[in-house]
Every structure is written in C-alpha cells, then in structure tokens.
Amino acid sequence: MSARRQAYLSDDTRRRGSAELFQQTVPRALVHRSAVSEVLVTGVRHGSDGVHQVGAQWSRAHSYYGPVAGRWHDPMLFAETIRQACILLAHQTLDIPLAHPFLTTTHAFTILTGGARLTDQPADVLLEISLHDVVRRGPRVSAFACSIDAYREGEPIGIGRSSANCVSPSVYKRLRGHRFGAACPGQVPAPLPHELVGRGRASDVVLGRSPEAGTWLLRADTSHPILFDHPVDHVPGMVLMEAARQAALLTVGCPDGLLVSCAATFHKYVEFDVPCVVSSSPVRELAPGRHELTVTFTQADSLVGACELTVLDSMSL
Image (cartoon, rainbow, N blue to C red):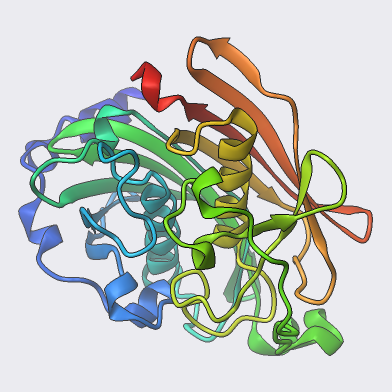
C-alpha cells in the first residue's frame, strides 16, 4: 500500500466511522435497483484526491443473503455492496447516464471472518474506492475499474475490485441483436435440494441437476424478486456468483460454509435460451478447513464465465 494511501486511511474521519454516511439509502436508480429494500448503499463522500468514501449497511436478516450458520453476515452482501457502490460512483463521478447499460467484466471480493461477524446491530460498512483504468470514446466513458478497501468500526475487513464496460442504449440494442429485451422462456430446471447448497427454500436454489456427474444446470428463474430485481435480457453477474457459491458448497460438502473470497470473470453474456452448464474443479485444501476451487460456466461448448472461490468450513471456525 502506498504512503499516500496509508496516510489517507489513517484520517480521523474514517476511524470515527463517518456516521453521516449511514443515515439513509441513496436513490435506487443510482444503484440499478427497483426495490428500495434492496438498496445497501447509504451515502457517499467524494474525495478530492480521487478516493471516494461510500457507506453501506448490512441487515442482520436479509431476505436472500441471510445469516450464514447463525454467526456471520453473508459475504455476498459485500459483493452486492461493491456492485452498487461502483455503479453509483460511475454515474456521479464519471457522468455515465442512467440509461446506459453496464456490462461487468470482473468482480471480486475477499473478506475477513471478523468483518462478517453478526452482532446485535446491523453492520455499517465503509468503502474507500478508487476509480481507475477509465477509457473514453469521445466525451463518454466506455470502461472503468474500481479498487475497494472496506472498513467496519474503523478496522479493515476486506478488499474488492470490479471492472465494467458501458454503452449507449442504441449500441446495446445492436450488440444484443435478436436477444435484445429477451425474457426467460419460462421453463427452468428443477432445483437441487435446498439444504445441500445452504439455502432455506427451493425457490432460492440456482442449480439444477445435470446428467453429467460433477456438473449442474443453471436455474435462472426471472420471477425471483431479489436475484431478478428488475427486467434483464441475460443472466446477471450476481446470479452467476451465487451459482458459483452454491456449487462450491455442494462440492466441498459444507452447506453452511463461509465464502470468504470470490473472483469472477465474465467473458460473454449468459443467455436465457441456451442451457448453461456449471462445473466445479476438484477442491484444493491449502489448510485444514480452507477450501479453494474453480467454478466455470459453459454455454454451447463455449466458456462464458468463471469464478475462483475460497470457502471456510464452519466447523473449523
């Protein structure tokens, strides 16, 4: 970490927690959410040196990303917080119009177990975000990346990164061709037993059975009110990351395992009308109770995305 960054992070305002950043959610349109209840970001302070502070709050009982093993906030809340915060800054700092679609290319987080701990209060999380690798085509930004440091009660709890392309509505329509505005055909694979993948309800499972051992079919049920908060014509990156998490828990054999790291790369759009095969690599156990593996997504024999994950066995914590 640079000396400048160290100096910035020791600022007394950050150590006090910047309470004013946690008073209310930001407008839902700025984070691409339809439901106000799904907005995690609660405030923003733009820094003159290019480092921006974003506040977020994690509920103790989110309707989808609920507590893990009764002990931790679901770290996927961190992934969604990063997504929302980067979109917010892109609109406010890079002047990307609200109507321009974002196409995520990479999205990653790593969190400390202490940072995910449940207490008797919601978790106020402060993100410090740097925007970089900004690409412009004429007056408009066409690509950007974010690097994130996260704090809770003044202590560092994790890091993240994300990158995306953005295009005008007319360019997006041209890119999508006949799939522009496409909807899910309606038929999705039957879900795996929910208890095997750490979910409380069958409707929350995003994996279905596959005839090939060690693989599953992606379940993209667009009627799900959280995973598909608003209409889309392809499977969102957060759904793919959730599918990777469920595949990892199933492969490790620990439904209440804690996902402490996930690095996703998205190569192509994941379409609704072509079966998407989810595959897991063998587990790499670098330390007792610490499991690493790779989950890939394939459509029409083409790799469309991959996630590198680390899961901790809850029994070892």
